[in-house]
Image 1 (tube, rainbow, N blue to C red):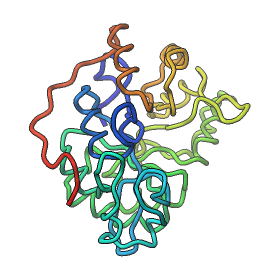
Image 2 (tube, rainbow, N blue to C red):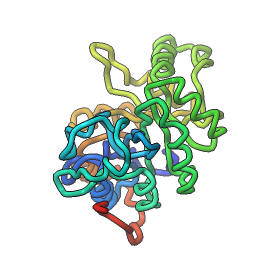
Image 3 (tube, rainbow, N blue to C red):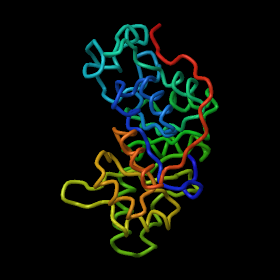
Image 4 (cartoon, helix red, strand yellow):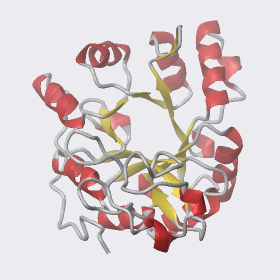
Length: 272
């Protein structure tokens, strides 16, 4: 990930690539984000019955594609026959990494068993330095950290986030000793603004994360009022369904850093 300190302002992570123009978690959505100058994609992966790592959020394809069923029960040959509203099939993770070599991917490992194939795909694409692996499941994250030997970045799991919240409220640095940090390849706490009636992100939480060497990325931020509140707290990144909307506002405030224009892109729409 681009170090926070090297940027003028916070980063935008396009949630599932963003859904302002193209279907979520599609190569088209990733291309649209890239065209906007956004270089961070938040996405999700599942595993097919024959071991292919595919980019999709739900365990079933029904909501996005013109078919029905669980990804885990379909082979790749079956799954790739279904298309979204724009006529494109579900992408393989390998395609996303290879098509967009200048993008950073925050990848949520959604299901047990995807960990090994996920690491294989990242390594085969030589994408270790532009991927952050995420999961709510602490055991899954622990396995990924051990197997990658800290060479591939991860975010905090849910239990570690709870510990960080407790440490922030207690203002005692010793409370962070059980929270994995940069020496284990952990780079960020990726959290909601609140969880039910409990506020997660406040000034103390941001300070505790930063003192532990972690960036704070908040999901899902689609409204300007929330964005302004989080900027004031010193949050480092925003996961959003509206990347253009937030980018344009950050430009107006002088908080957006223009990145170099992308190079030529290959294979934008998967149809074969």
